[in-house]
Image (cartoon, rainbow, N blue to C red; front, side, top):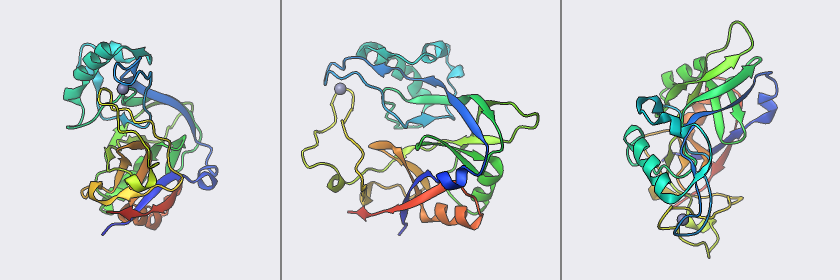
Length: 242
Ligand SMILES: [Zn+2]
């Protein structure tokens, strides 16, 4: 059975590189304004599909500005994107699509983070991990404008939500998700536990489905990173419970 690790920025390692970037995804679903079910105005974090190219639909201009929209308009826009997104994606408010657009400078290490839930990767690192047999890595082009003349080849991985946090690590009185918009007002537990039956068996890298800012790698991913000497990720093993 696999072991599972929570991946975060190893700031000691990443601070050895001067690489820096400021970017956002090209398109996104709007937030939801005053959900008719729960009344909340919200947009989620950590749902990013850089491989999904909204330029394929004529309405792509409607996904360029972040703003909240009423439920019927949100549902209309969500339906336009659905055929382009991976099957069974939830696509909650605030889901982002397309390449990272922005500016970058400096020397990039193997992994560079924007916050704790967005990671970009050098192409040589990705090639090495794939050659080592790490499964489920989907490298996507970025549209970062570099100041230097010979820019590094930097990709973003599309890391899809799979698996769930186990109910034992959530507050006992937690309310079920809103039946209209799917929102569940959770704060991240300090000590996450993964729900064994929910975990994917066909990929070595994923986000937690009910807490998408948490990125999980298997022991196969961790071993390949460490054997390649690729720095920039700290690994914390999480318990798994049935
Ligand atoms: Zn709701």
